[in-house]
Length: 437
Image 1 (cartoon, rainbow, N blue to C red):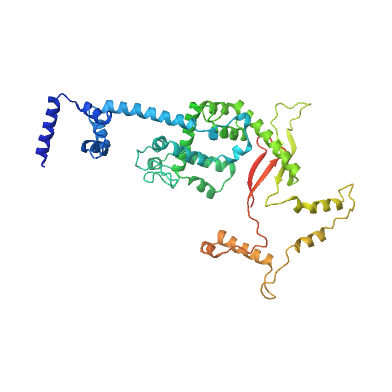
Image 2 (image 1 turned 90 degrees about the vertical axis):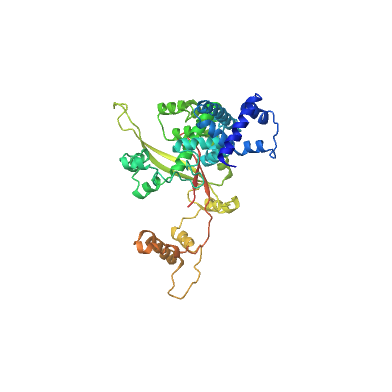
């Protein structure tokens, strides 16, 4: 059918509708609202479902309907986004942090990556909106590539600077803080480049979590997981109280009173864990001396301007790798023979040479090769020398790193988490995570 014939047919349909006094609004409501002919086998209904975007785009771009269409879309999406935030705030107790009942496990188990994934799953449209607003690009233009953590590849470089920003010679905030951190901590240029390589998509992902967390707390004060973690972190960094109050009013941190309640709760929980670990006899004590310089005002005779304190910190380390009390039965024998034990039934003089002999023969040497072959210690030293040359030596040797295999293990110990309980701490946390190397 030609275009002229099609146009004439449509004109005749419009004239017929006017003749029978039926408007397009009445016709659409009859089909969609009254559910008349809601069957995909009906041509009109199937066409409406298939071309919904075309109809909405026509209303949006037409001068007579653009304003009302935008107003309707704005009101509809505001209601949708408000409902999405409300649903996130009322999820469950996962994102609720009661300061007076804070536990060290809540701090250790908190992962902002898990929070981001859950937010994206529960409110995908709201998540996409914030991602596009942060990147400044519309939907479908790579506003935030979540899968690979990268950002827009068309207008940003490796350190998250836009082309316009680079061309104009204006330093970004990230570059400024990287230079500031390098001056304060003495980081090498290699570590600085590593920190600069954070993709913009990852940064936008973190910002999205922060924005949604502020909205969620504003909707439900109990949903304050991120704010609680930030507040405890600020306390650990000795952040001034005025700064904490400002951040709390912004919705980024919990209040100063809540932080103090959380610290007291964590301290109580830490004391209980220290007591439990100490009574189990499966912990090792460690001590460290340190000095603390206190700022003083005007020196007087009673208070000289020294302000130097000599302190000792203590730590209780849980013995990992399946250590049991039966494995430590030798400690009883050592204590009964120790010269430091005033009630030792069988005191003996400590012989350091004999002790070193026992240590050297703990793992007997296994014959490997002829008379001129290297010992186990020699083979390890040779491996370590090659490893150092391949990593830090001439560029031509770095290609050989792939051929360097791991040294032979005398007794393999699987690295794992080491739990440390602070015996003397500054009121923050008694339990911390470390990684055994």
